[in-house]
Length: 404
Ligand code: TV1
Ligand code: CA
Ligand code: ZN
Image (tube, rainbow, N blue to C red):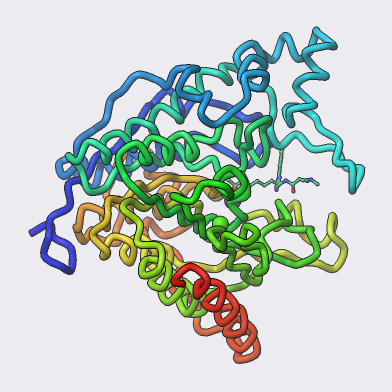
């Protein structure tokens, strides 16, 4: 019974480490690792664990992380603690040079603590990266068709530093592991932010292609400000960016996603695919709204759970090994609903909308205890559709360079 549209049962493995869900970015921070425990709670209560193998693995090692980061940065990460950050000026300066702690933005002059120096930082990094690495190895071993790590997907971390809540780039580590077995690896990023760290890392790697769909304002207000349609990774055309306007709903999103990924599959012919499933709607209004960015109200992308999961469905349909990773997502009950549903999609099971009784039940009250809390918003405006059609044509033309 558990088959995809092609009638094939997918062999799925899944990583979950309860230790990650106790990690605390700070009381006011919007990144809440507890959401992976909530996701796991839903997955468990829907009985999805019966249809997947649980990957229980040791954390990554420092050696594993060296394929993605400089030794200098790793040395810092390993020894950084809230106490050393607070009491040792040299450590504090080094941290801030690498994007950690309270950092002042040179352009805006604003201070941010996106990447706080938290308790057990190093252990956290080793654990979520260990999950992505184990998942990649499970695919490389040939025993699975889909591997899942909802605690991974930290796409902004770069070689020498932290960025956008990401300390270690587990995606880079996982992609390199996949390259040990697969000839070409495609990275698709549906997080509402540009997957800049992964894109930059693989610009010179001819066996990797990166494609990011994200909210983009052309003015650099919306983080990280990169990923315009003409950002194609120089002459290689293996970095593709699909900038979207705030308010983009299911219909418009899939006018872009389906045709673009289909063409990518055709011209790049990947042997494995990595999908970063950052939640499509970024709930940052309270901070990025009218008060801090005068007049520029950021509404985020407006995908429904089904619309978001359609990306998973489409990429599954190619029958190429698929690594599913988490990423952003800041309304934790929505994130858990979305990732639970996507896990069900991966194993090919329909699950009821009504959330079964379980320990985290109370989190879902505001959404009426329904998985699908938000139905597809009816269409975007004609003007927006036309504008996006132009972007699509540009992207398609860029893809022609790869087919040559
Ligand atoms: C501490 C406490 C940090 C509350 C950060 C929102 C906070 C944000 C906080 C926040 C917040 C950002 C910037 C500003 C660059 C800075 C996991 C000029 C209410 C993958 C990362 C977004 C997204 C970073 C990560 C962004 C991901 N937005 N409250 N910080 N400076 N940083 O804009 O792609 O989802 O918001
Ligand atoms: Ca993205
Ligand atoms: Zn994001």
